[in-house]
Length: 367
Ligand code: ZN
Ligand code: ZN
Ligand code: ZN
Image (cartoon, rainbow, N blue to C red):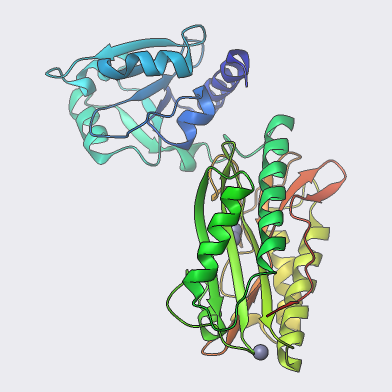
């Protein structure tokens, strides 16, 4: 990424803000700030840091004066004017002076209430809206560079999965296998591990179960779902494995999920509505009689975070556009018994979907 690349993103964001009827954007530390200008403060504290983007104006970054050298190194002067505020002054009042009076601004979802309330006090009459509500698609369409980064993160997660198939499952706790997964993700180049789900036996039927003290048994189905960040971009993949030879129903349920995942993948093409990809996966599972056990949406976008728009969910009419990257992760969860989920990251291209996770989707047998 060059200064020019960030500059183009900020210009695009300014135009998108204008198109959405906003006076501009106020972006605080988090994924939007990194994506827009490359700046990730080492510590996010009560001291306000905010990037203001307004259409047709040079973007401005307000930082605590003690962090100004860091910000200048990371975000650079050129594309951006950087101003520092000092302890003992009110940064919200400072920021308020930059804003268009009575203007409506899109603000980062994660902006601290402390700062937004301060801003509302300093600039009465201004309106604010959450960025994912007013500009949900700001980061959704990835350029070639971003797709390449996501593919590299996916390949690293795939390598971690291949390796974990060789570790011992039976007789070890879920959290031990989760530790293996975290170590493998780091070994394969991740800088950050965000989640390592190991849901064995009945725990696999709870999609939010992470990993606990349960000792994995011979005969267990085990849902693995793991990911994090590699070179600033996310990975997120799920496979379900079986300890020893699976039984007939386990095979059947796994095969239904595999078919649903494949059908949804094949439905990916420019122009199809997000909800229709969800419906394709759901139809396969429902016609096999397991519809009530597929209890979550089919997928979510991924980029500089592991969960972001677009969401493949009923009610999302937004059409897929080449460059959008998202998960396809149908599952079946049989309470008290076991769960199955299969998840790949997929990018929408002109000619259809391309998987960024390519490990086998058959039911793998582990020891
Ligand atoms: Zn079993
Ligand atoms: Zn996942
Ligand atoms: Zn996911």
